Length: 113
Image (cartoon, rainbow, N blue to C red):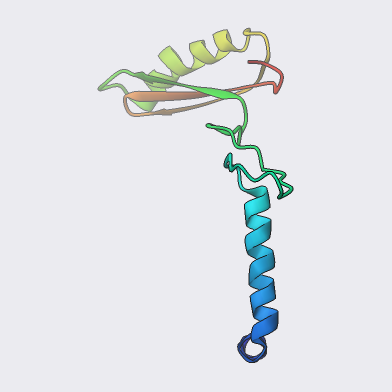
């Protein structure tokens, strides 16, 4: 199947050239750069410096070296998790406790900054 496509484009150079020109023109029309082209209609794709690709969350790391996961859970993770549940706009809180380290993921509602 792929061999047929390759053979078609190798044998029909005019079609191949036209398709390449169409794709290059489309790329220029949608490029997010500020090119000065008055006679060429452009609709550039907006680009953010840091795009919003995930949930609105904060991560809290705490360390207490030499302590067991149960001590970390009882003394750090659980009290912080229950206290952070009272923060306005919190949707979900997940925590993880391992030897000497606690990680708490606080996920906020989408409209909270």
